[in-house]
Each structure stands twice: as structure tokens, then as C-alpha cells.
Image (cartoon, rainbow, N blue to C red; front, side, top):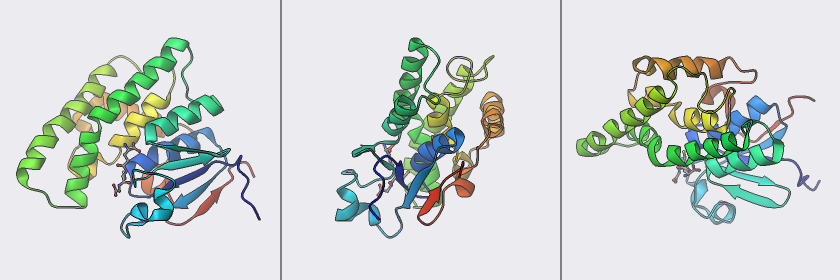
Length: 215
Ligand SMILES: N[C@@H](CCC(=O)N[C@@H](CS)C(=O)NCC(=O)O)C(=O)O
């Protein structure tokens, strides 16, 4: 049977925070979609068939209505624009949410690097000495921004929260204790209380799967 082009198809991996971001978005939105696993350990992301989908040889990628969207924050932006969920309530909020995503890509990636170098590869101590303070500074910045507020933007969860949390979700695997940042910890609990929320290893399957929450 020919796949339905209007059905969202997400390519990702269960170990990937970048994949978790759109997975979490879709889970919180309760939307049907197809998941296609990309085995990073076997290098599937660098094989020609996948490079034709994502030129950068990385997960995630999203296909929808004949379009291919890559880069996790662009995927979040696309999903928010096309489905309306978690986009931001006002024009200003929508821009501010995207501002956070841009900042996230520059800064919270340090958390992902610390986790990656702790869990998947050994690097020179000097590399960790460089990235760990940056990771702590990024989480500290989010912690300060959350002082006295429930969400990063406006009065409800947006793609800013999903994108920032999604990249820092594995911080414990990098030896970072979320309890050191009380506002971040409280915010993560607010996110966890949203219907559909799950952590990456509970959410992202290891094999191709169809998600049809309303079926
Ligand atoms: N800026 C990219 C980063 C994507 C990324 O780093 N993906 C990782 C997994 S989290 C990956 O595919 N790594 C495998 C590789 O680079 O070969 C995004 O946000 O989508």
C-alpha cells in the first residue's frame, strides 16, 4: 500500500535528545504518526538512503505532505505552525518561543555534549573541562528565567519548553543532578504532569512503530 503523505512520519533514535523533542511534541499533542527508527550505532544515519532524507546525517527528520523537515527545532516550529499546538498564545509569544529555540541550539547543546562524552565516548579531560561549565551555565540560565513563572513563554507550555527540556532531558547521564536547579526541577515536574508526557526511553521505540492515540 502507498504510504499516506498526509500522515506525519518521524525518523529518530531512542538515545537521541534531538529525536525526543519532536517525539514529545507529538505525544503531548496526541497526534497520530509513523515512527521510523534510525540505528545510530550501526551508522544508518550516514547511509545514502537516509542522507537523501537528512543531508546532515543526523536524526531527527520529519516527512509530511511531500515535505522533508530536518533540525529538531525547525521540526518543532513546523509542527507548531501546521497543527497549532504549543505555538504560543500571542504573536510576541510565538516569536519569543522561537527565540528560545535558537538560544537552545547554541547553549543547551553543551548539556548534550557532556552527556554524549560521558555515555558514548571517552574524550580528553580538557574537553569535559570546557563543556561542563557551559552546560551548567545553560541550565542555570533556564533556571533563572523560570524564577516566578511556570513556563518559559506566556502562561502555558510552548515549543520553547519542549525544545529546551527535550535537549536537557539526559542531563543525569552527564552527571548533572537536576536538584541543583530547583526551578528547572519544578518545571520538569510540570511538564511531566501534562497528558501524554513520557521520558525518552519510555517514549521512543527501538523499532518502526505506528502511533494512533485516538484509534
Ligand atoms: N542540530 C541537530 C542536531 C542533531 C543531532 O545531533 N543528532 C544526533 C543525535 S541527538 C545524531 O544524529 N547523531 C549521529 C551522528 O551525528 O552521526 C538537531 O537539532 O536536529
